[in-house]
Structures are given as structure tokens and as C-alpha cells.
Amino acid sequence: MANPQVFCVGTADTKLDELRFLSETVRSSLTAFSNNSCTNVEVVVVDVSAGQRVTESFADFTFVTRNEVLSCYSGSLEQTPTLLPNDRGEAVAIMSKALENFLKKAQDEDDVLAGVIGLGGTGGTSMLSSAFRSLPLGMPKLIVSTVASGQTQPYIGTSDLVLFPSIVDICGINSLSRVVLSNAGAAFAGMVIGRLARFQGSSGTSNKKCTVGLTMFGVTTPCVNAVKERLEKEGYETLVFHATGVGGKAMESFVREGYIQGVLDITTSEVADYVVGGVMACDSSRFDVIIEKKIPLVLSVGALDMVCFGPKDTIPSNLLQRQIHVHNDQVSIMRTTVDENKKFAGFIANKLNQSSSKICVCLPQRGVSALDAPGKPFYDPEATDTLLNELDKLIQKNDDRQVKSYPYHINDREFTDALVDSFLEISLKKHTESSPPQSASSDSSQDLQKDCASKTKPVTRDHSP
Image (cartoon, rainbow, N blue to C red; front, side, top):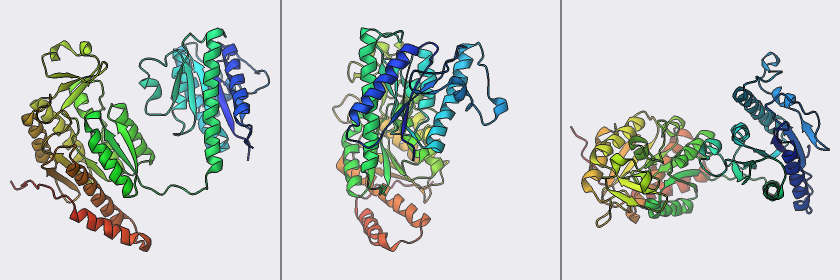
């Protein structure tokens, strides 16, 4: 098997000196960090120049020319551009797609890729980040960027891409850029060596635990922590996602890729931000992939009493007369109204009614967040009751799509037990219906089913007309 390679990616036509310095730093750091390792990692420089200048070689590094990258633009030689357009935006888009295909080939076909690092300004970061994001979770990916501080979501998305602040523009090697690039190269080399060491030290046995995604906010933390603790005792692995808009998208991307086999969507506050116009919003596709993949879903209404904004002076002027709570210097939250809660219920019910898999909606009657309780700033029984009643009315119930109400607050231990019981119940039903009998697990499944049946009983609403 060939030695692993890391790609140092940049535009040699405009960033030649910086790319050379970064490549040398990565190589020296890999050598320093791998003294006790038998793995020799090769640094390969990849040119993604979007201009017309062509670079044919790069010091003593293995070098992938711009034209070699372009050859991966499509599967057809006739469709592969030999010359980039003069329009920089079009050229960047072509190079980004070609780079993505080049990386995919190195990962899937050649099986040598151990990490990618690059550098760039706004255009370079846009070009590289789109391609880097396509690499799997855990593959080291880092960009030294002039836009690493600020609105980074368009570059990072739901990936584990690291943006490393360049501090100064990437324009020559100086006393400051030398420090930044050296640190970035060393950090990247450490990630690569660490990952390779983990692979070498693994026993080759895969993790058989079912992985469950959970959503959490600060105001639902006691609930989610208790759910997490109990699920892990039951033998599940848990991944907790902060319900900040990006968090929900990240969870659903892992559902799509098969990393997550079940979801307890406890904190659905992103829906409130989407409907009202907050800064931590989901988009119109929320819940779609969970329903599409038909994995077990337990859903609740955590933090739907609030809409998130930035500092108080950034709240739209037409909303300043509403009930506002300053969470911290960077986050202000607004209490949701009766009418808004009706809209939240409509959005959620419309999604869930399209499902054909096991779903259970668990509703806490005494409050949906730490702030929605007697004596707390968002305590509004009318608004909360409206949300719960609308959901109960609008969701089309059947054997696979249940709604259960409980006389507890969302952070009460009794409610967290109800959430886990519901998840275990529908997970076991799905396993029983979709898998052949397995004698090795039958005893534990029966025990869990008995456990589910003996735990917290819901308050069943009257569904008669």
C-alpha cells in the first residue's frame, strides 16, 4: 500500500511564496511529530490557480499542476476545460468543482489521502472550502484564511473544516505571516499524525453501538443531559447538537450519511427562529431527511417559547416592545406569542404527517424551557398550551405516529424518562419489524420492552371527535 499523502492546496499564480512556506512547514512538522512512527507521510502540492499563469514544478515537492486538477472536472475529456474563462468567478467555480472531484478520486480510488490544508483570501477560501467540505468527517481539513473571523457558516457549513485566521492578508512572508503559517502547518500536521496513529492502534473492530442524535439548548440542558446519561446506560452512543440553526442541519446531515440511526429532537427551537425571523433558524427542509430515512424519531418542543437574536440593539425595531430577555452580551431572546405558536405547530405537524415511520411526539404540559416556569420571565401558560393543543389537534395520529402529553416540565426527570421510554419502545418495534430474529439479542430486547412498559405513563388525550 502506498504511503499516505497530505495535499497542500493553493493558487501558485498568486500565492507561490506563501504556498511554498506552508508546504515546507507541514513537511518539517510531520517529520518532527512522526519520529516514533513507521508511517512516512508525503506532502503533495496542488495548484488550483484560477488565472492564466501556469506553474509546471514546485521545488522538490511532488506537484499536481492546475491542468491535472482540471482533468478531473468531469468524467468526459470533451467536457474538460483546457483554458479557464477570463471571468474570475466562473474560473473559481470550475476549479472548485475540479478540486472536489480530484480529492474524491484521491480518497476513494487511490486511498492515499490523509488530510488537506490550504490558504487563501475570500476567493481562495470559497474555492477550497467547497471542495474540502466534501471530505468525510474526521479527515483533517484546514484553511488559513483572511475570512476566518466573522460569518464563517457559508464556508464551513456542517463540516469539521477548520478556518485558521491569517490575521494579515496572505500577501508575502513577513514576521507575522511566518508565525501564523508555521502554527497552522504544525496544527495540521498534529491532526494528521494523531489520526494515523489512531488507525494504526485500532484493533480493527467496529463500533456496533446505535448512534442517536439529540438537540439541546442551554434552557433544555438538564433534560438532554439526563436523556443522554440514560441512553448511554442502555448501550447507545449519543451525539448532542446545539440547536443554533447550524446544529440541526449538522445532525440531519449525519442522518443522511448514515452516522445517526435514531433521533431525540428534544429542542426544536430552530423552527421558531425560522417562522419569526430569528438568527438561529432552520430552513424549510427541517425534519425532511429524518422522515425520508425512516429512522426512529422522538420529538418534543424544547425552547419553542423563544426566538433568538444577537445583541439587544440588533433586534428589529418593530419587536422591541415584546418580552425580551438578555441571555448574554451576544444573544437576546424574545418570548413567542399565541399566534406564533400556532404557526410552529402547523409547520411541525405538516412535516410529521408525511412520515411513514415510527414517530412519537412528547409534550411537557408544565413548560418547554427553563424560562417557561412559574416566576420565570417567559412563563406564559396560554402560549404554551396553545402550542401543545395545536400539535395534538393537527398531527394525524396512527399506530406509528403518536402524541403523548405529560404533566411535567421539560426539565423534570419524569419527563426525561418518558422521552427515553418512548424512544426505546419505537426503536425496539422498528428492530423487531425490520430484522430477522437474533437469539443473541432476544433476551435484552424483551427486558427493554418490559422496562418500557413499566415506566412513566402518559396523560392520553381524548382523540374522539
